Length: 173
Image (cartoon, rainbow, N blue to C red; front, side):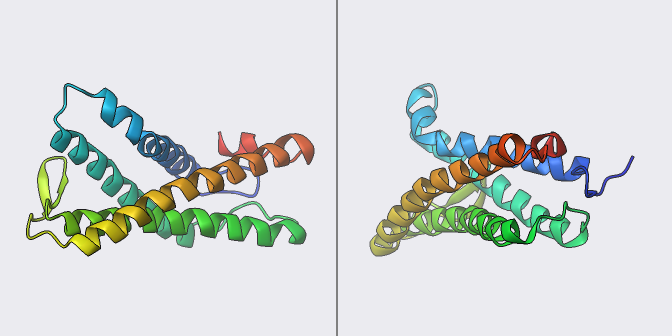
């Protein structure tokens, strides 16, 4: 089995990273809803789950970027699409980095600390109100912006599939 991408198809590692990150990102973007619906969990337990998934996403992003640097068999795009694809992916990667980092800073500012599935990553400490407020707002703004970037990503994939006939969805599934 070829683990690397080819010009015709993304490899199993790239596909697994893409779809697992997509699922976790959508789960996180919907966390306002599911955190309220999980009445059985305390607010602290729900926040631990939110933070833990966020840290898992950050780790997957680091692995994805390392994999992307090693794995050079991606499809070659026409020149007029190349810049748009690069900017779109740069926006996705930047947001996927900045959202968890802003969440970490907001949590640090709250004084409540950060946990990873119950294990402390950042110990609880004194509240730093300005830090919490600034990065809570930033975290929410970036998450809302991510919805638009994801919509652009999905629309581009559908355009490549159906309008341009490039069968891009088959390469990623």
